[in-house]
Amino acid sequence: MDLAAHISYRPAHSELKVLFMRVIRYFQTAYLLHLMAIASIFLSYFFTKEFLILWENDESSRKLILYGVGSIFFFTLILFSQFDARSRYQNYKLAKDRLFEYGFDSRLLKPFVYSRCQRDAIATAAKDLKLQKEWKQLSSELGFRWYHLLPVIIKRNPLVLFSKDYWSKTLFVSTYHSKYFLW
Image (cartoon, rainbow, N blue to C red; front, top):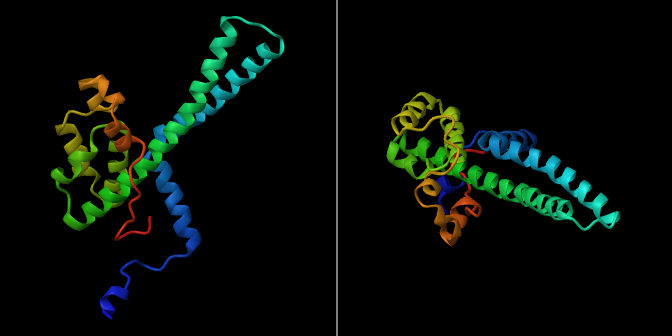
């Protein structure tokens, strides 16, 4: 058996610290998505409450339909934003490993710059590795600003929303296990 395979390059940390740091990084990588989920929780509650009041009063009106659709929409938005946040965390771990292994190279990061949430995940990875100056310069060179929220591909082709490939890359990114870092 190869002894090098059993040597861990990761420093020893308590399980509690590792869990805490993973949670912190999870929220840092997709803070806009988490804010959207929190807002959606409140809006879903409001719309559901109003819907139930109208339902109990046997009102059949446009308001009943509006509140019902609003309730479903905001509840669904909670789920979608959390699926997206999980995917951005996977992007963060992959990008952090690549930055650590190969150094800062724009070719490694270009697959991750198509949405604001992906860029936030990369910014967190770059900050962890003290490469935020290079990251800011690259994102500026690519023409991205703080107000560019929509994914680039949606602006180019809105019909991409109906493709399986888009949803698998947005919401269902496969789990990535970091090679070099615990969080």
